[in-house]
Image 1 (cartoon, one colour):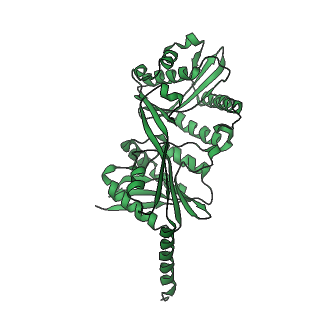
Image 2 (image 1 turned 180 degrees about the vertical axis):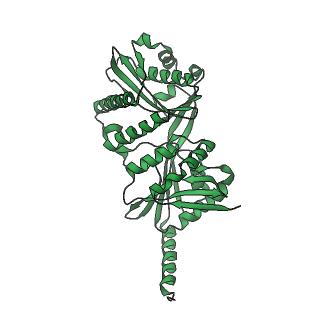
Image 3 (image 1 turned 90 degrees about the vertical axis):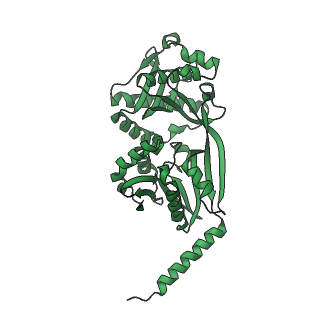
Length: 360
């Protein structure tokens, strides 16, 4: 078996691999936050000049069997490793969730061994950080089983993923109150559903979502996700891509031609993922549940099978919509000072050997 690895350190060099990347992602059933477009756009907007791209592509013969999409941030004490899509400032983070190694499980041992060897070659690596990943993910298994014994691995589990089947979704609703709100007709709330017909209408709805979302957070005296111009522009560009690919679900709820809510979801395969929404804080009725019901109805008409509410705390309102959950963890791995010093000494010895070698 000819098992090879390619290391991509320049962003534009990734473009030829988009098709193979996406084919592998679909085969291993990873979500949109591991998609090529999401991560490439994130890298264009968020990578700093001091960051070091280090995407790992693993091949068996000519077939791409794994992608580990990572980069390094430089700090005063050494390098910190993150997934592409993570590691930005908290006030402007896009919240990439459920990321993982894109990996054909048949080659797990070969990939883990090669990646571990690669990490050992980086002499000033101080930490790894994989945030908001599933507890049974490949990256979690790697951190738990393949890192050096003296690596300090800290796993925090403070959130859960909520999801439910689209068909007969009312059976999954976990609260009588939520069920009552979700099963009412829009007309009973005095609401109408508005769907966009063009990219211009999508962008107008997006602007309304931003305004509603920010208004709600200002009322709480907090900045909110859309307080960052970079965050707003990231999603403006991503929404355009989704519209071109017919993979966005966006709609507005209006009362007397006044928009009181906007829904923003991503369609990926047969899954609808709820990414964000904006709701009028002056609404008497709790129309958030109504919005989710409309999303589920549209998803069923589009032939989708699962509604992913993404990650939230264990006491989120989402627990009233569904009891289907799985744990989400964040992993922080710190290498010991002893391990780091040994690698520095090994590098020093290697440099000295090269320095003493006579020039021929």
